[in-house]
Length: 319
Image (tube, rainbow, N blue to C red; front, side, top):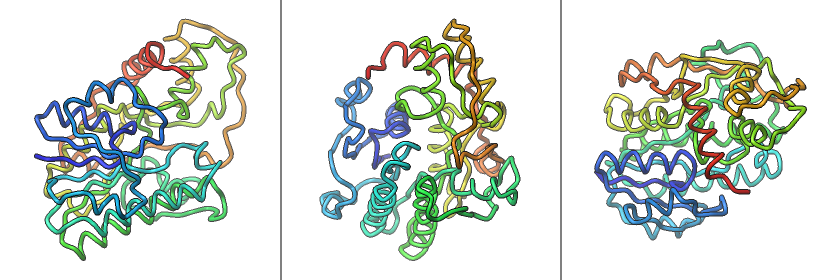
């Protein structure tokens, strides 16, 4: 099987590329490398995958691609709270244009995975109209269309609709996967587990902790990529939105911080502070549909996953 990974040099993308290679597939990675570096993981895979540099917001980048891949994975997007809050217009422009040009390019008969997010329904959770754990059937809601923080969710809502409707109109199969708090090595420094890990390595004391009472169900990237690959191999998943995550170990941020500090071997004074504005108080997916379609069960326990992630950042991260 031949796989095209758009945004394939990003966090989930490169882990997915490695998993597809392990399964014996031919992999092509396309990315603009806006993360700013080609890290050791990408260097190691360079001899095994085809790597192309392209700006996916430019339709000419798609015109240069052949129609020879069996599976296409759309992972390219501007992500991260800092990016969203500092340049929300870029979030909307990049995330929308890259996808719409893809949908113009993709041919009938292809199979597409579109990476979406639990942020699509976070507004409904905050408003108290969406249950937690959350199934795919809930209504989507934006609390404040003028808030920079919500631009990422808006871009992904549009993406979900564009993918599902275009797939029906053009005659290709598409799966929308809503990722829920995926974590692991090489995900940057702007997400909670890497951020806590890096601050613990620096020995911060006091150790500021924002939103200690908020809860999340974290999913290790190995489990997330397994779910993606299995969904793409499941014909019944076509035309569906499917939640991807780990619902077995929901934890609050306070307990997560205790785990990271214990792994780091330090005991600073913890100073609890209010959660960032707009941050949803609780997030946990209902994985009934994913389990029914694929038999999926997460395998990486939270403590083991955090230990692996901490070890990678301790050994490999450079600022």
